[in-house]
Amino acid sequence: MFRHFLLSILLLGYSFEIAEMAMGFDASVAVTRAQFLKFKASGNTFFIARVHRSIGQPDSVGIANIKTAYDDMANVAINAGYKIGIYTGAYAWNTICGSSYTSYSSYPLWWANYNKKADLTTGWKNFGGWTKATIHQYDQNHSENGLIFDPNVK
Image 1 (cartoon, one colour):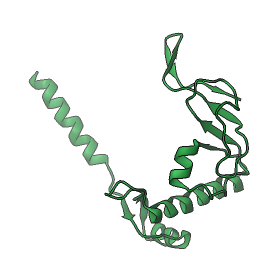
Image 2 (cartoon, rainbow, N blue to C red; image 1 turned 135 degrees about the vertical axis):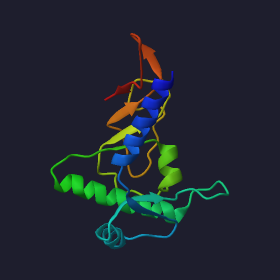
Image 3 (tube, rainbow, N blue to C red; image 1 turned 90 degrees about the horizontal axis):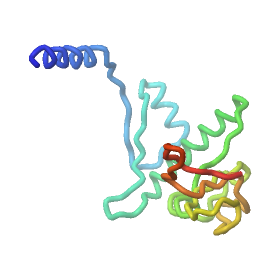
């Protein structure tokens, strides 16, 4: 038992020894792409966006920062030759992005709506500029053949 404890301490010490510090920042103010790039150039490698206020409501400034980051990620992926799509449901999209935010509607939509209907139309209502889904995730934690998974249809 003592040897197991000692080994655990040694492994823990080793993991701390090889860990590297990383600088980053969190903010609840609007951050532009140019500001993100300046922070990156000064050695920051991560950002934590605050998108929820203590009163239980989404934080619109934090959401704007997330949109900026998503726009940048989408542009990098597209410029690298990748095809992108969006995974969301109407409630999440409208709550986080707002019903009038349509910037991604030209991309295929992977629609999360757990209505247990393996089709693309049951329960569909236009949102975010999308008029149809490309893929529908219609259930979660589905169990079949000894596997738990989220089933989809396209």
